[in-house]
Amino acid sequence: MSKRSKYGYNGVAEFKNFERRLAAGEFPTELISLIRAHGWFVLVPLQHYLCVFLLRYITLKVREQLNQVYPYISCRTKPEHKVRAFFKIKAKSSTLSHETERNTYLEWDEGVSGPSISIQKILNPKNGYLKNGVLSVEYGFQIDAFKDDGIWNFDFLKKMFDSKGGHNTVTCYHYRSNSRLIFHCPEQLLKFHSLSEEADIFVPFPDVFVEDCLQIAHGVRIRISASRCLVYAEIGREMGMMNVVHYCDRMYVQNYPDKRDLKKAIKLNMRQSVPQIMGL
Image (cartoon, rainbow, N blue to C red; front, side):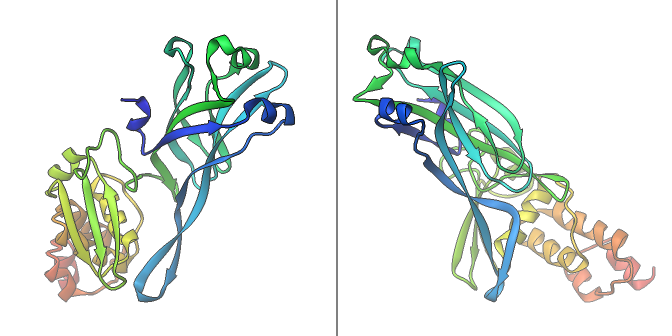
């Protein structure tokens, strides 16, 4: 199994007519995916959230002074991201293949570069890099975390680490808009937070609310408003994540002491908020 399978986004890019493209000084771009721009959300009717999507693509670039080419993945993402990337320039003989894995941080309009290889080496037919004029590059790409409002968050929209099939997932059904979104979370953490390995959740809340609760459950201390403290506590209770309820309870007491929703606090078993609201 190729190393690229360990990455959420992976595939093989085929650059056809390599020599002609090289002479023209341009290589085509191959779309890898449309990615959600974390933190950019637009509220629309039925309390459903649409996300802004940005392009991610792979291409070849030339280092003219060194007479080399290298694969490059462009990542036009708004916040800072922590990413992993894999590249393999394929050859007929595996001993001649150029392979690399990288861990790096990316900001707006930055990308990840793969291994450089001599153009003469590629054009030499004995090396077997070109097959019918096509240069093939395996790639893998994974967003491990992203920074939102100065706080690092997990990326639950793609498989993390070595996720297996349908395990390590939380499927969120938003029944008002008849939509479904799958979040990928580590199996051990799901069990620790009292979720089954594969959970189906039916909620009247936007997907982003559920994702925020998963962030809290996994230790991310996000900033939330008073109204969302109550909403997230309710989602946490429905999902069996009591650490989310406790976090929202604490935030409600510390940051919004003037709020008074006793009925809701009692219903959600917010043990710090209830005494404060009652003046005890």
